[in-house]
Length: 378
Image (tube, rainbow, N blue to C red):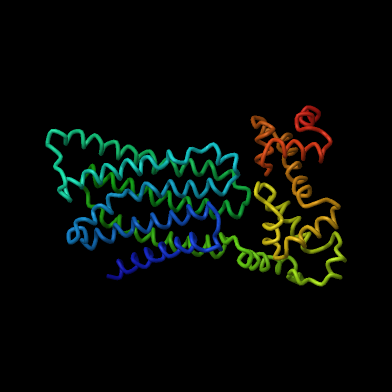
């Protein structure tokens, strides 16, 4: 009773948290949507397990069709897409996302078709076709061996494109937890299937571990590392951070006195915070970065961001950010690790959105085209 109660609490938490991420403006990003889908899928896997241990499928046979939907195949897909959507557009554009859903779709169709005969009695699979059905089920197992172990491994390879080291750390931890759950589940399931062993105790432990992943994701992902994207949430996070770095830093809103705004100097604390965001967190690699996003991070208005940058640097916001991007490209050109990258790829990796804007900005900052700079730097 206590055990199923713990599972039900985790299921409820996963569904509610997923809905909050999808519906709330606090978590408005494509990446976070896949995290919500991951929580939904994990909740449904646990729900199926609760149905199984409570013998619900016997009392309500048609619930078998819910169980036939192979939710477990979606877990590696959603964790992978969560990671992919947190990195730059260049890497994302090379991914054929729809291909990752093929094992899930195939397995669900095979299982549902089989139960339309066994459970619903809509038609009867002839004995002569049982061999073909078994072939389909073997392909289903083959998909399990492919998608469950190897897609998370590929996800580890993609994590290297994440720029923020703190974010990378917690995403690696989340991926590792999911990967271990899936790998142990797959080994346990196959052991029970091929050797006829009792795997119920191991499955119970795995289900309990899955509830821990739910709670951990809620605490670490949402509250500690702030997946939230709106002004209030991020301002609160950065203000706490600023309180450590700059204990006397006031929050500047649109109502900041005009005389204070006019006395902007290079030691302006908001400008120093912006410099840290660029130098340490590399926010310029976000190709969608604009004044509004930076304003949210600093807890000030977009107009004040422009005023700070214009007054201190003598340039507009776009040129200020592009200077960091150009410097990043120059470092890549001189780094042997990037010798196989094209210049355009370097530009896109650094946050530029197109070849035209990249070449134009590079020429403006250095007085040379990227090709000219690369040739002269050899």
